[in-house]
Image 1 (cartoon, helix red, strand yellow):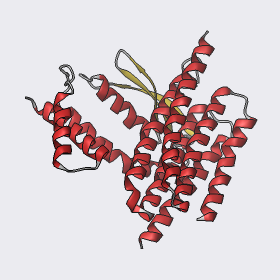
Image 2 (cartoon, rainbow over the protein chains, first blue to last red):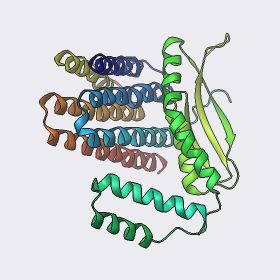
Image 3 (tube, rainbow over the protein chains, first blue to last red):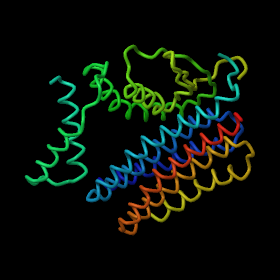
Image 4 (cartoon, each protein chain N blue to C red):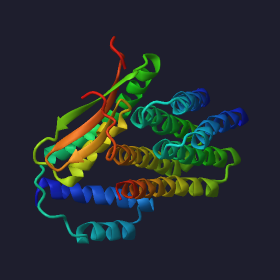
Length: 95
Length: 133
Length: 83
């Protein structure tokens, strides 16, 4: 039961990875790609790590630390990238 | 001693016990000593209620982020725009950081810019409307 | 577990290809950010697979150091563009 759940979470995470990373190749704006990357790299990776956590719960402190680092740093990196990439060019096509 | 002070010290103790993973008496005493000795921050203008609310919002944000993720996967959002939002009054920098974190954490919205006069610029994706991209 | 790892490597190839193919610096930065997270998660998976927690510790350190470095780099590029 736990095993299926953990494999399910890992597979959902990998689907998120592919879904969010494939738009990178197209030519959309940086900010649009950032939205799909936050799906794949933050939420997808968190799902994968939670799956690992269910599989092997006795090393929980390290994995919980990994989840927290992921959530906080990826979000902050997203904000910093959005801020830095939009400050000198106007990507606003309609307000 | 106000309620915020107590909340602050409890948070410090919780972090100490998470870090050390040790509930022996000497460790409890050391943790107490450290929690009380680290100086408390200057008078903050935000109230305890603000902090409790935003902590609650952080917890709620996680399932909401997954919900939004599924939403933009199954119903493609191909349009984008920028909106401006007023910062709530009486915010110190800690609360503003948490606000920005919350908005950026959910996949549909990203804070692009925070300016000193109290506005966030938020970039978001939405579903396509009929006219051109 | 092996097939999971192979799928992850395939996913990792996408941002690598993008970083090679796109000339715009911010698109490259996005691709690098994606590579940084994906590699660390793969390290965590490998550490669970081999039951070796020292790899896991390195993975968590790589995760935070890598992202912090990318943030610094983003600010540097912004300054350079302004000058």
